[in-house]
Length: 325
Image (tube, rainbow, N blue to C red; front, side, top):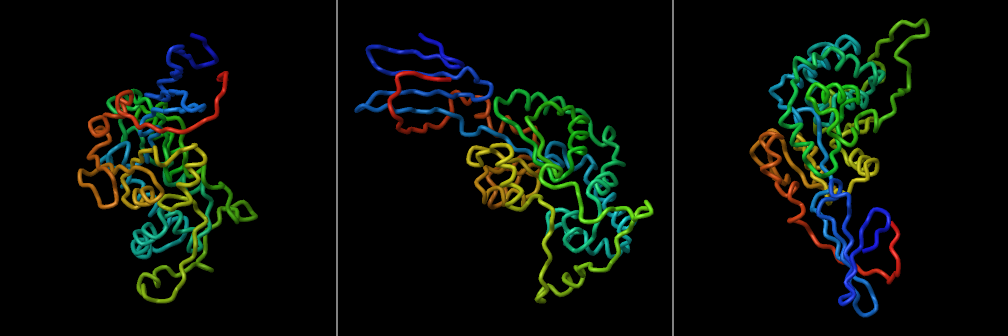
């Protein structure tokens, strides 16, 4: 047996077959290459697990909706709209759900219809007052599950990175993921206008140039053209495609966990294998449903025994007399 770099090679002189076994089984479980001589060519059979990456939403996915976190976030957003944007409470109540459904997040919707505010100011107001250690408790069970998984794990959230870090730390999961892709990752922190006036006082958005979304709601059959949002976020294709590039993700070999059906439907359309979290009822167009993220081991045991359950891919390569790691 000769050793080159990170791989070992076994050669059977009676039968010209070489087997390359990766030493990185914690990263690539059940990965094996077999090269066979046939008609002057080598054939490689690559045995690999069905999934090589798990992509997770954060809020209401890694912890339950019953935590009260989402309710507090929604309350803070409403207060931001009233206090910072000068909107009336009745208008806020009318706009909240339609903006969210149309644009993916309320922030994206507010920016689309013309409200100008600093992203960092928004996130600081919304998340800065959250009592993370009260709303979220350490989850050693989930931590054990995640740490035992022999595949890549990535967070994809519409929230900002500070919220993601604080939430994960409160859950005791801050070191369980390869990386966090958040609002900050996909969007510039700059805005077209400063949130402060020239004299240094805080500015307030005015209604000048604001698209009348309430009128659009009242007249859904009108020919009003909805403005686009500058915010990149789920559930839209461009956000997912950016994540695929940033994290080097193959959607065909990735499981995506989220509590939002809209996000899951986009993900499915783009080739991801989808898992709805927080429900035991599988929605049409979604592959799987888990009442709790804790059920992942029972639902996907193959993630742990990838050595036994894998797919075979065969392709042809030219003959080489040496192997370079």
